[in-house]
Length: 239
Image 1 (cartoon, rainbow, N blue to C red):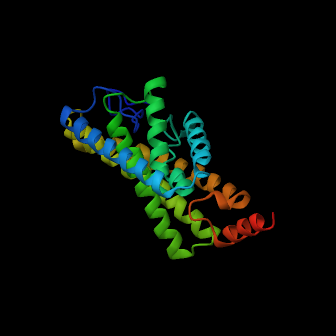
Image 2 (image 1 turned 180 degrees about the vertical axis):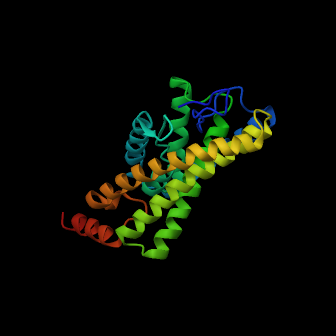
Image 3 (image 1 turned 30 degrees about the vertical axis):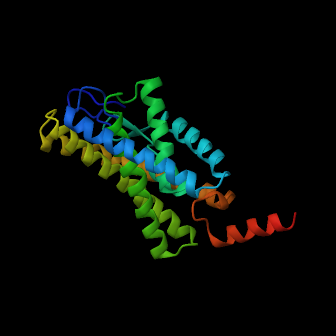
């Protein structure tokens, strides 16, 4: 799904193409994106174990493939998974944001899904807001309802996934409006309307994926349940 010139059409998406943002917005978002990637690289190298690297690769491949699959929404259009919250739940905010940035770069360079000049904005909207915002909202809800409860994990993941997509769409609307591409009221109404429904699909897919991983390999999750950590420790000590 790509942004069209007519923002009344339901093809509005968060992958902004070239020519839709002004130079100041492009520069500011590029600075934020480069700073985000640099900090994420530093934190991942300092805090993550080597076994997280293969998981990052698998997660990136899964999100990349899942984004290629569109799901229908009412109104004759479709949406697809963004995956920011899912990456945060599995990898944490630093590695998750790094994975999402790599996915967006590959999509832009190889598949022209989002422009090169506005890649910084796409990384900020879906990597910074989608992954960081989604992760910390998920974590707050999870810990408030019970850290080691599947119910709390799924509720947190669902709410965070929906919110991350919807908030990212509003930020994207402001970027388009401040760039003079479209009036603010038109951008917000169009983006909010369609992404309200697209975010529901994001929440459903995220919950299904997290639920499967929780039931099969909970130790792979970032901040896994305590029983999974204990089981993993026992399995290593028995070898």
